[in-house]
Image (cartoon, rainbow, N blue to C red; front, side):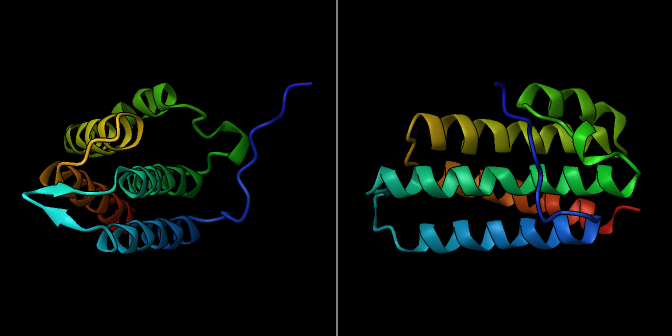
Length: 140
């Protein structure tokens, strides 16, 4: 039997934004524990963990925005491809698309999947993840 996607605990835009900031703080805390030498994080396991957590923050913010616009939890995006399909329908979609590209590439692909350890790459992804969350915090 196929399991259904279930988003628990997020019933409003405000809750989603609060949770997104919590994810970012957790990722930042994880990164702060990793030694750095010559612009490289020295423990890829924790970089992967932090990157995966940080990547989820903008997704939560997008979910919160959609919930705030009346989209039911069952209709929220269920994959990265679905998020890419939703982004053009959201205000500021060009800025959002560019920032999401950075988050997707730097955190999800390189940091999480490939175990990338370049400090500037991860910081750039984190910066854009926070900017996306900030964007939705202020969005009507």
